[in-house]
Structure formats: C-alpha cells, structure tokens
Length: 107
Image (cartoon, rainbow, N blue to C red; front, side, top):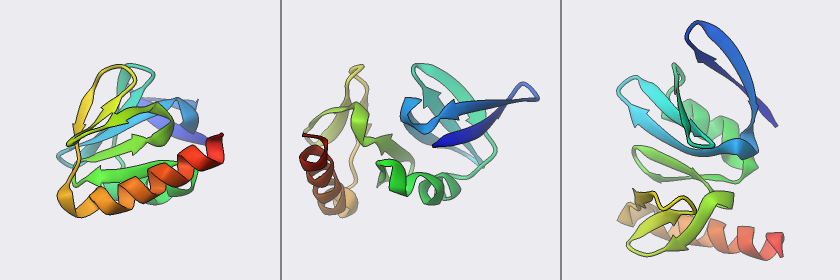
C-alpha cells in the first residue's frame, strides 16, 4: 500500500512497508521511513486507522510500530535498528496477540 507524506511543501509517496515507526508530536506525527524522519499533519489516530490492516499496531498513546521491524519484546518493544519503544500495559495483550498472528502468518 502506498501512503502520501508531505515534507517541505512537497508530496512524497512511500510504500507503507518502509515505515518503521510513527510517533505523536503534538498535533503532528513523526513518520520514520527507513531511518529518515518525516513530519506529517495527520494525527496518530488517523494513521492508526489507515495502517491497521498493513501490520501496524499502536503500542502506546504516542507510538505505532510496524510489526515487520520488531526484533524483540521485553518491557519495551525493540526494533531491528535498536530503537526501544515503550509498550503500554493496557495495550500489551493486544500487541502480543497481533505480533503472534504476524509471526505465524509470516512463516
């Protein structure tokens, strides 16, 4: 799936699979596209709805992760690049279920 990002007054179209992490930043969302941060005017809630069927899970009020970039799960979620993202207690069960489904489907 392709998504549109606006940066420096220009539109960029990227494949959703290249998005690693989305972070709420006030009214905006920082979208991490393969290590490059792009600011989006969409809210994290809008991104959550748009990307839910693409293997993205909201793990905290301020974070959405792409399951394909998850390396391990501890008290936090550690991404393949070493980034540690907080995992909210109230979202942990749903995240673990979705991650198990992803791993089983991906085999």
